[in-house]
Length: 257
Image (cartoon, rainbow, N blue to C red; front, top):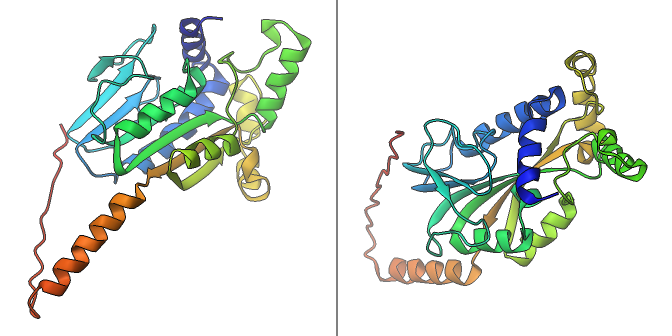
């Protein structure tokens, strides 16, 4: 399956009862995660069906797409390759990857590009299917049995496990700030049966939290040398300052447009 076909298949699958169920959970977590992130430049890479930046108030917000993805209305859309982003190094404050690594031609290079364009202490938010879940196990069983109709989730290539993703982030000097799993209902195809299993959400989140169908990760880019230099400069200024110091507060407000 080509990458463009995978993008279309994922978009179609998100309109199914199971897809809408997971999409609603992811949208809720994204709204909470990006609402209080301040800065000037935010970027969503792919999957316009998920409005990852709708709750964010940064003045510049982009949706980057490639392949055959169809943009939603009222978005600033960029056409670019995810492994060669058209931004200067250290220029963005927030980047969201909604199932982006699963669809990327080269997920390692895509993540390296994210690290390059993200400023120090900037955040990256990543959503992904969890292969170590009941949904992932059913998907693998369908692949073993053969035939497209036996698959439960879209054929988006190899799903990237949570612990594997943490290793990638650590190698790129990211620090995982928050992680959460969701989607504990069984892999069912109808709204009726998914609703009947709604009671299991609290039980799953408490007793087997890492087995949710999807994961949600927030990581911060750490550049330790730059942080140490900044601390040293501030310490030097503090020593040279007069005993009576006046604190000045500057309020930067990003107007939502």
